[in-house]
Length: 181
Image 1 (cartoon, helix red, strand yellow):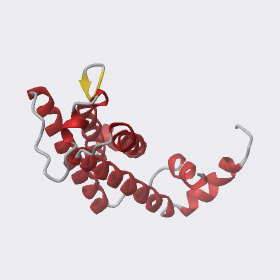
Image 2: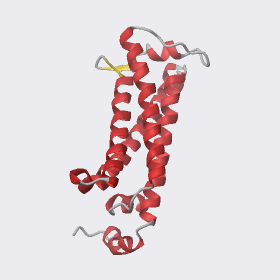
Image 3: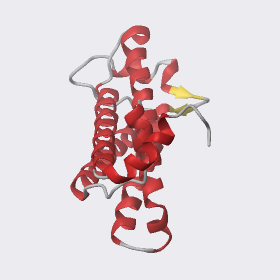
Image 4: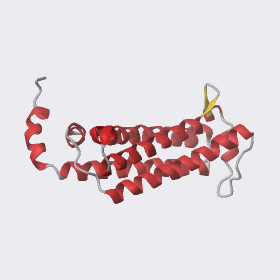
């Protein structure tokens, strides 16, 4: 927990472009999966499910929508926001202007979003296994995607904070103290 707190309070060192591109590609894959399920929902069609037999049961359960909105649409918006955050960071890293000023904050909020997405994915796995008693292969693809994003975000945060030992030594005493400055 101490390392995470330090990672989120320090300015981030430049994230590796290759890791960011991987992160962006995974977010686009997640967006594609969730958008497909959203489109099929609004068309009134259950997508074919060859690997498991539970897609129909999961996608028509009471948990498949919230206030009449399919949960897949929330997933699409989540993946779109994560992809936009990664893209804006890449643009700010190589460009200038207003995005450059805030690109570190954009990346931190994107990383926080991956933790929320991972938590929601674990909730949906719990629902499928323990409440609905069926597995949707498309939903599990989304779980794999959000888990990959979360792990990649942790990796990038750790790498970023390791690259800043001088900043870490200056701020560590402030974070470790119980006093609010």
